[in-house]
Amino acid sequence: MNIYRTLLILMLFSAPALAYQFPTEIIEKFDDKRIVAFVNESHFTDAKHWNPLEEAPPLTVAGAIVALKQHYLADHKSLGNLMIKEIEIRQTPLHKGLWHYIIKAQDNGKNFFSFVLMNGMVIPAIVEPESYK
Image (cartoon, rainbow, N blue to C red):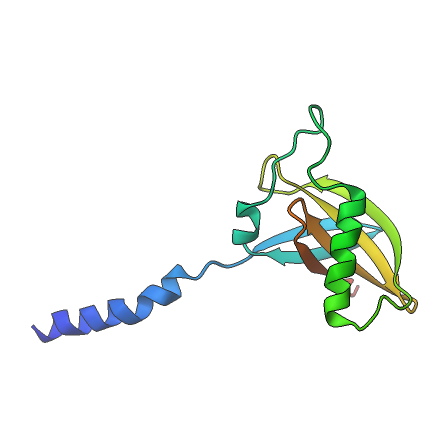
């Protein structure tokens, strides 16, 4: 009887840990660098599918830039010296039909990268450090 009580308590406390979903890691080669972003699967649930041969993208380049500016303004008081340097659109690995923009921006001479999903969600990316030889 005591073992059943212990098992019940163990199941009650371990259920939230089992329900946790680890984010999906997206690794892209961009601008001769490997950049990494961690995206929660829930961000893909309302992302719009796109077939480039049949229709225009659900989020335009201008829309992706607006989303990046809003995300940037949430952390900074103004756009300051923000400049967009490069933009690419790519299919999201492991998610057929889902695409994202990779945006390289610069602020005060410092580059940073962001992924923008087709639903306007901005995901900051990090540059993977180069391995030492």
